[in-house]
Length: 363
Figure 1 (tube, rainbow, N blue to C red):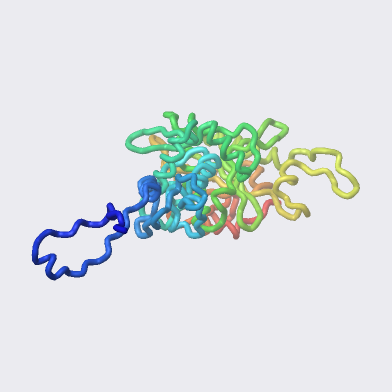
Figure 2 (cartoon, helix red, strand yellow; figure 1 turned 45 degrees about the horizontal axis):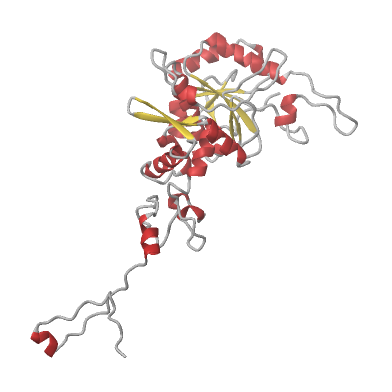
């Protein structure tokens, strides 16, 4: 019985010399199956340049026998690709409200030289239906924020601290009144704390309301430090000194607010700050209030405004009841939040700067 010719076998040459002494040739490679071809064509191009994707990898495939790249957890930030970090990008935007690709790279992929992976993750989130992130372009720079759908997705993950009235950041990103630069300066401060390993970027809360007898206190940021204590962070670019002192007095009102609830024999009533920041044994002092002076157009230099704030804040009695320290954003980003960049209000040693760990405790 004669076997049917293999359609993938190359036909024999007709030249006489070839038939007289056939030269051995390597066996031809089998043609790829349609399914394998389809898998290669659909591979998401979110691989690191020095680590090509293995054959058959398909991060968008619904097949259960071929794991997608996005479904393989990576432990090192260097190995992450755009599809791997889309969830972290979404959570970071939900946490900090807005950021640039450069800032996201500094937080999530600090060892990468460019923002390619972050931009791929952002485009991936933008192409969802409905879109999970939004973008505003100004002066050849893109500013990214969560959409309502993105906030709902991030909240459903259970990774965000419960905060009522969490904003998307769209209004801030599109602002032309300096609000966007104020938000970006706060992200730069979070990067400085993150790089100094004082606090993770996920441990920040932005404008979380704190009740006081004079109305709600809205800190620009509250950060949970790695040692278990917390700190209030205020960014100043254009605020008047009178408003800065008024906010400082609002912190003093929050610290002196009466206890909530009736308590019991085992647990005395506590104030809001004791409930949230003093710890189970009430052994932690009131968190320090950190003012960061950032550059702004048509305003005095940050170090000039910092010195003027010290002169005015030193006359207010709240400096004796609170730990208030200041720095400038250029100083913070250059040396890091863990270095001696903080200047204490009311310190008799004048312009001496100290580390965050060396700040005096509130009375």
